[in-house]
Every structure is written in C-alpha cells, then in structure tokens.
Length: 526
Ligand code: ADP
Image 1 (spheres, rainbow, N blue to C red):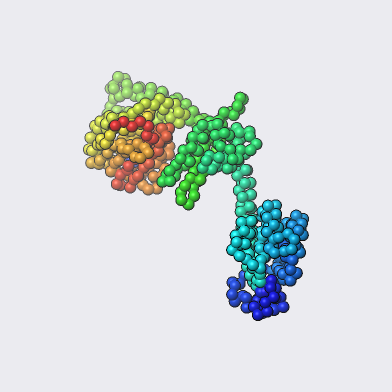
Image 2: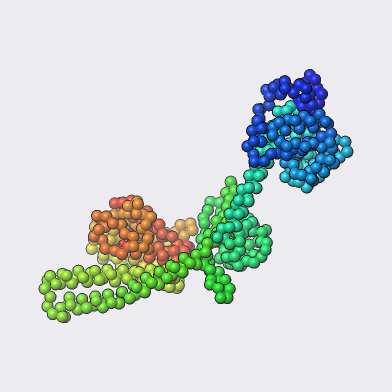
C-alpha cells in the first residue's frame, strides 16, 4: 500500500514494510503487468519525476520504478518539481495534488502549458469526481488514489509508457512520410474539404511555379493559378458519396521565357472518412514532358514512313491494274491469278499505311479539332445501311436499333464515323455466316453510350486486355484467314480518348463480343 497507514488494509503503497505480502494479495485483484518487459521493449529508458511532499511515497515509488527499469528523480514540492522539469525532460510526472505551497493543480497547469508532451499522473488522497474532471481538463493522463498497491502503480505507468510509445510512433511515421514526400520527384498536393492546402511538396511547388515560402493553410486558389488543376480539385471535392473516381488530365505549364513548357500528368482523388464523407483531396503531378516528346517523335516518324510508302504503293497498284485490264497485252489465266494476288497484298499494305497515318494524326491531335453536335441514331442508321450489303453477303443479320430518344454528343464527325466503321466492319469480319450484329446508342446517368454487339467468334479471355494495343491480333485457327492490320481498335481507342470517353469490351469466346463506348454528355434534346 502506498500513501496511507492502514494496518488492517494491507497491500497498498504507504505500508512499505508489508509490501511483499501486500503485492501478492493485491496481484489477486489487479491484472498482472510486466512493466519491466514494457520498459525493455521500448527504445528509451523512461524518466519519471515524483513530486510529492511525503517522503514515504517518494521512496516507495522511486524504489519500485527503478526496479522496473525507469530512471526516477524526486521533488519535495511543486516549485522544486517545476524547476527540475525546466532543467531536464521527464516523460512521466507523478504529481501529488495536496502539497504545501504551490498546489498540484497549479503545478499541472504550468507544466502542461510549457511541456505538453509530458504525461502527468495525479496522486491524490481524495479523488472526487469534480477533482478528476478538473485535472483531466488541465491535461492529466490518469489518477492514482492513495493508498495504492505497487501493481496499480505499475499498471498506470505502463499505460503511460504505451501512450508515449504511440505518440512516438506517430511522430516517427509523420517524419518518415515527410522525408519521403519531400524527396519525391512527383509533385504531391493535399487539401482539406475547404480546399485549404494541407501539404505541398517541393516538386509540386516547382512544377506549378510557386515561389511562396509558406503555403500551408492557404486556399489553393490563392496559391496556384492553374485553372485545370483548380477545376479538378473542385470536381473531386464535389463528388457525392456514391461516386468515387480519380480525375486525370494533362496540363501544360509555361516555365517562362527561354524555358521549355512542362507537360504534367495530373491525377486528383478525394479521400474520405468512415462515413464516406469527403475530407479533402490528394493531387499527384507527374512530369511527362520527355515521354510526350518521345511519343511525338515516334508518331512523326511513323507518319513520315507511312506517307512515303503510300504513294509508291498507289502507283504500283495503278500499274498492276493497267496490266490486269489487258492494256499491256493479253494475259494468261495463271498470270492474272498471280497479279490479282499481288494486287490484294498491295491493297492491304496501302490500308496499313492509311491506318498508320490516321493513328499518328489522331495521336498528334490533328484531326479531332473541329467538334460539332452529332445525332448518334442518325449516324448509326447511316453506317448500318452502308454495311448492309457486306453483311448480307455473309448472311449476317445487321440491325441498327433505334434509341428511346434523340441522343447527341459533341464530336468530330470524321472521327466518330471512323469509330463506327471500325467496330461494325470488325463485327462483320469476326462473325461467321448466319450471325447477328446489333448497333445502338443509349443514355446512362453520366454518359452517352454506343454499343456494337455480335454473336460471332468472340475474344479469348487472355487476349481481352491486349485487344486495344497497336498491331495486336488474336491468332488462332478461326482468325487465321481473316485479314487485318491490328490497328483498327487502337485507332478507335485513341479517338474515344481524345473525346474524353472510354471504350470497354465484354466477350466470351465463341459466343460473341460487345464493345461499349461511353462519351461525356454534352447536349441533350427532347
Ligand atoms: P484487325 O485489323 O486485326 O481487325 P483490330 O485492332 O480492329 O485489328 O482488332 C484487333 C483484334 O481484335 C482482331 O485481330 C481480332 O482478333 C479482335 N477483334 C476485334 N473485333 C472483334 C470482334 N467483334 N469479335 C471478335 N474479335 C474481334
């Protein structure tokens, strides 16, 4: 028993003589805590200061805590205690409330205002509810009411050490994160839900050309003037609970006279609490200038090669046609057959060159500049009738299904026609005779969709993820005799993406394929 002379009560500090027996008894009542083990597990030796005017308590606490591996000092009163705390740091202070001179409460207030990290445990002989509330309000961590058993002291100290350890872990983690984020080459910007900056690493400030020393707590719009980024943060914050999507954009930042512009890939995403409420945003900036340049070079090269190949191919084709038409003399059947085969090969080479040119034009953003309002049902109708005879030749039932209402998108006519051409001609080529193809448009909550569905060969599951890559073709017995360049779907994807849309394919091999394009809603007419 510590704290009071109560001979008949036994196991409490304050009745040191009987402490062994006392501990044994008390340990029947309070859980066993190995403070020694806890102290051993942590990386520091906890420094404890006992501030109490009763010598018995000072001694008993000091002896017990030293035995448990703590470093312990004692102070006779509040003034001495505060002086010692000023001179060296204590992790834990055991503080008596009732002392002559400065009261424990005053010591607590003074101590907490200057050393908020120090954990204070109040020792009191008369812990009333009011007292407890008052000391807790002033920042006390826990209570020990006199008299107390050694094991109670151990428990309270071990709780305090756990608390200090958790705080240290958080501080260490924070410091590790700070170093990581500050050394990242990508920019990172986080805001709270009021769009105030909570973090902006040096890379972010550099990319967005911000020279301010301190930006934390400021509104993003007061610090950065990049409208796309501000718009993305607005959109992310405004996302309703049931929606959670990453917003991605490419931003071109002018780096001033004589410096090359930066092209930055920006991704913005909201972060949420347990109830799915938006707490703020995280935006990541990745410098893609070099990548873009490389892509442009590749595109230019492909376009140059394709262009250079196309004209000689056309002239070879024309000359072959002259010979085939018999204008250069009579041809034998064998010669005709060979020339027809050569002509077919040259046609598919010309087609490849045309598609390569298209792709490089789309990728360099050349052909989708002009946008107009397009009525999807009309476009679908036109294309279905354009391909009707080709489908009929294979006995394929090609249907353009009407939409429930007129659906409009803002798009480049030539591009969107190319999308329909590619998807419908693919469906015809990869559907065996007797099959069925349906084309229609509909409206989802946040987009307009175009669907092209067939019940043909379908696409093997392992090929689905590659289907939109340039030059990728499914190679198997069934597709062996179907000609193609492997560029059609890559063109479709580039066009759809340049219209801020997405393309998706669903397919089961031998059962068919359904391509779905989702485009942003722009104009909607009843
Ligand atoms: P290709 O010129 O080879 O048709 P695409 O890029 O248009 O090139 O298509 C890539 C591959 O995707 C094709 O080779 C084919 O294997 C597969 N594919 C495309 N559309 C369909 C479809 N409707 N049904 C089954 N497979 C398809």
